[in-house]
Amino acid sequence: MYQDKVLAMILAGGQGKRLYPLTKDRAKPAVPFAGRYRIIDFVLNNFINSGFHKIKVLTQYKSDSLNKHISRGWNLCSSIDQYVDLVPAQMRTDGNWYKGTADAIFQNINQITDEPFSHVCVFGGDHIYKMDIQQMLNYHIQKKADLTISAIAIPIELAGEYGVIEVDEDFRLTGFVEKPKHKPKSIPNDPTKCLVSMGNYIFEPEKLIYQLKKDSLDANSDHDFGKNVIPNMLKDGSKVFVYNFNDNEFDGIKPAEKGYWKDVGSIDSYWQANMDLLSYSPELNLYNPKWPLRTFNYNFPPAKFIWDEQERVGVAKNSLVSEGCIISGGVISGCVLSPMVRINSYSSVVDSILMENVTIGRHSQINRAIIDKNVEIPPYTEIGFNKDEDLKRGFYISPQGVVVVPKGAIIN
Image (cartoon, rainbow, N blue to C red; front, side, top):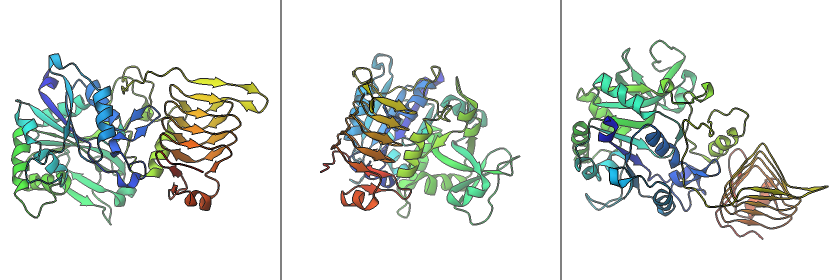
């Protein structure tokens, strides 16, 4: 199997500043999602489900939470040379942290040269999507490409918000246009769509090594794939092709899932992506046995719903409830609960995300909130109803009014 000769390098060192305060103590790829997963689980599952088992995860920013999650939940069979290895920033070159995406790979170029790999995949670790990466690799081989970039098709009227990739009729890269002010070049045969990079690349190893070394010597470079390396490859005539992610399919895919990709780069987009999971037929299906979503498995008991006495009823409506949760005489509606959450009697939690080990006190009212782990909400507390009061408590409020209670917050 040619997948055994492919190295996957996942860039997981991002700070995720727009997700603050969820990224106050953790890197963006380590932020919980959909109750029991972490954001990085999605790209890891994409590689494993696609048959790729040689994976390096490059970490840097506040990586302790991510390190624990990977080491505990992603143990492959080393006896047959399968691995998900953590690669912390080691300052191998000039004593600096990673200066950009290309520099992160350059500082770990030994990972590429240690074995005779046929291809190198460089993927981001902070997006929510499902992808059969083997199909992208097949496309790369068919095109005899030096580099293949995965891209997502978006409505052309939204092009002004993104960096747009331009291609010819054969989907060979011809140029980039950063946040175009005028109508950019559309996809061949579809004038309503244009292409945006997903930040996922497949390289021929020798081409990648050459370009990284060349870029490292350029004092004016940002050492970034999108800004520097790829434009340089265009200039020197390298064969750079674009893979249309909207054509990707996987076992058990539903029509609504085709082309699903979320950045969840802000509090509002993160909250909305979690809420979208609660619909009857969500775009992201967590329940497809043909495309399993693995993560660290908690040894917690089943969720429990107790009390049915007049107003004291333990109820969950339109919600995801993880293992170890106890809905004890309170009501949740439109919520995503991580493991070991307790909802106490006469309380109400609506349209909210509660992370691990959160306790909601009796008679409390919570609305449109994200409560990070290890927070105990006292009885009779209201969150999400009075902006001034929430700000006085030190909570963050997003542009669309989602209240974020930081990890371990003490609430009086």
